[in-house]
Structures are given as C-alpha cells and as structure tokens.
Amino acid sequence: MRRRRRSVPSESPALSPFEQYVSLMNGSSTIDSVSVCRADYTNPVHAAAVVKMLDAYAQDPMGGGEGLSEHAKANLVASLAARPQAYTVLAFGGADDQQPIGLVNCIEGFSTFACRPLVNVHDVAVLPGHRGQRVAEKMLALAQEIAIERGACKLTLEVLEGNAGAVKLYKRIGFANYQLGQAMGNAQFLQKWLD
Image (cartoon, rainbow, N blue to C red; front, side):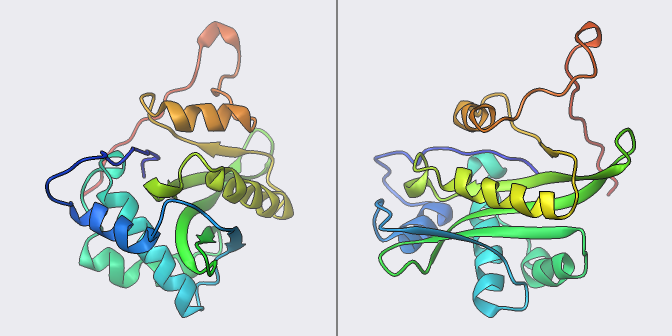
C-alpha cells in the first residue's frame, strides 16, 4: 500500500466522496484531544474505524484516489485479525474523543541479517483536518512500542518522494533511507502485481 497525504483544497464547487466523508468525520478542524490505541479487531467501534479510515485514505489522491472495493470493506478486519503478524493503531479525536481521525497498519516481517522480526508500517493515514497536529507521530510511537514488545529490530516503511510532509515527519522521528553502505546507494521499493 502507499503512504501518501494531501491537503483538501480550500474551495471546491462540489465535494468528492472523500471530502464528504472528511466533512462528516471532522466536524471541525480543531482537535480537543487525541487518543491512540491498538485496535481490537473484535471491537465493533474499532473494526468500523479501521474500514472507514482505510477507505478514506484509499479515496484520497495520495492513496490512489479510489475507495476500497466492497470485498475489501467486507473482509478487511477479519483478514487482519486472522494474521497474527498484523496490528493496527488508531487515533481518535474530537470533543468526545470518539471520532476516528488516524490509522497505522503494521505487518511483521523478518530480518534475515538480524535473525529477528521487523515491522513494516504499511499504511499511515490522518484525516486532512487533523494533519500537522502530530497525530501520525503519536500513532507511530505506539506502533514502535508494539514492535519493541514483539522483539523487532527495526521499523520499515515506504513513502512517496513527493510527500514532503510525511518525509519530514519520518526523518524527524528517526527514519532514514535504507542502505547497506554508501557505495551502492539507497535501496528502492519496487512492486509486481500478481493479479
């Protein structure tokens, strides 16, 4: 999955489905408080938040601009729950601290060189009205704590080079380009679709 963020234009004659969702979810652009937690996939509130946040992210042009398929919406939470290597961190905000405003999905992998687990931060999403308020930083701090509890040697993630805000955040909290040595340069992230 892609990790991307964008700003919602200040003037738009018609709201896109993503902007309509953001408008409904935000209520206002000010966070009274933010809480982060590890998602409990069996909790209906958390399950709904996972689907809503990932769908909002997918609809964002930085997430591909197309919402989740009906199949993904119906099966996402159960599929994550069936994978013990997966975990999700959610952020809630608003006056009642009950509005889902952010999501981080993580998938455990394995470092053969370290012979230890590693955790890939697979999705990072914050609703536009809550960006720039360190919501992602709070979620990533909890994701890191969980990774340490799992014995992981490192966190990994991918970010689009044009996503300057995310790159700045990730570097500020300790992420760097991956390389084994300067002579060969930075690693690249590639993909190959199988269907």
